[in-house]
Image (tube, rainbow, N blue to C red; front, side, top):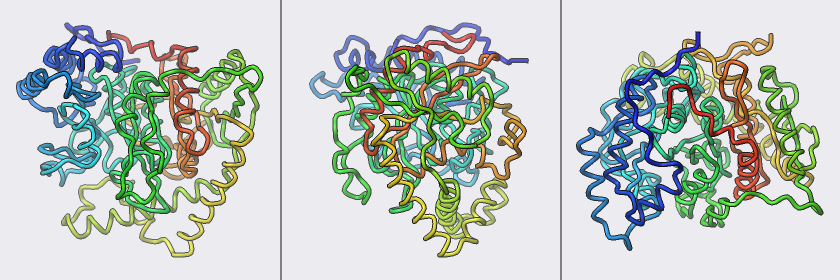
Length: 485
């Protein structure tokens, strides 16, 4: 039986979208104190049932910070002035514990902001806590031994996805206007799909690396999440920018993402070319998800786009992903060995397995993965000379039962590891190309399903415009969970 939220007294959010509320805060038309009060009223009602926001600042302290923001002269206000934010629990914020969902880190209070938090603070945000994530951000089901599980607002018995599940659930319930996330194998795209919000994985190097420490083999990137593509672009305009400490930072990373606030315009003389790949080759995909991808292709066709069913050249992508992911976790294992006594007694089995996999890798395997990835990028660059955007699922299944750690079987196909059911995102990660999940429809049970769009090399703004075009035609984002206003 579907479990739905049942509030006793829930005030409406005093914002309709992030762009407008930020404009009003900067202009003084809305006070930061009023917004903070409204947000805490909603958090107090919603969060106990959804468990999306953790490390929450006491309300009295948050209100005091908002009053201070209201005293800042208008001329000194940043683009996100006075906006309450809860960063993902992997982002260090001064004065807060960054737990990574790992019990030994539960009381690890930060003494300074991470570069990403610093950038957000300079834009004017008020930090009120973190959003929940799985242990070390590994796995697309948000639960951990520190804070417990995050529930899907559309059905509280289902997972919100992960690893940015807390962020997605907080957005879906209007506890936050904007949220950040990170993405290795779908950690922005999967929870966005499960919670009917937007999750944008930008090109590698477009945002500050945060925990994405690798150079050539980097898989992780941070990115914005929001209810709409336009709001996502707003946050991206703050998160992007030059970073001389990052060897992969894109030279044009300070370009104006606010350009993406206007949707893509179809040119009849040069139609938008969309490649549709419902199963990304031969991946097992839930039948209802496949139907929604076909419908999304029809939506673009009705908009005047040229639709072709074509699978991208991604041979060896999952092998490369599994190896390079394990290489990174090999480093995690080494760090834990040096800093946490008997850390394995706290870690979940999938984390231990993945670290062991990294420790067993040979140099030849690591080199092979890099060669595969280099070859894939070259082929994908050629693929996008023919197409403007690739359309595929954001997740291979709809939201599943929260009691199940990971999906072991899809449409009769048994899966070997906890990563396999996320292949539709992992394989795209290997390319380093920009990708976004936007609301794409609902199953017959009323569960959200996201559509994943992949853009050209370094084509972040163009991708956002195309996503905005799809969103403005479908308006699935307007369909809120039962019981929420």
